[in-house]
Image (cartoon, rainbow, N blue to C red; front, top):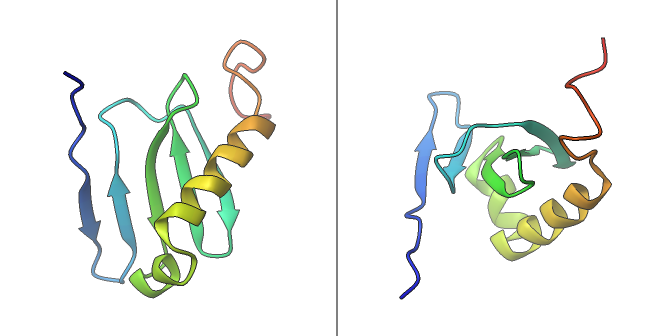
Length: 87
């Protein structure tokens, strides 16, 4: 039987929405659409989604956000290719 990770949604006072999909540490972050940022773990799995508002997230829909997140992950360097942010 497969286990599922319970999603946790947090809304900040300023209206930002964060959907946590994993307990893994964040390895890198990418802007995938206007007002939407995705956090990835070291294996390239989606760790969480941040949107500037619930409306921003609703406009695209979670399926589209996940599709964009997976496409962006394919463009990102793997952990073995990068030692972190360029300075």
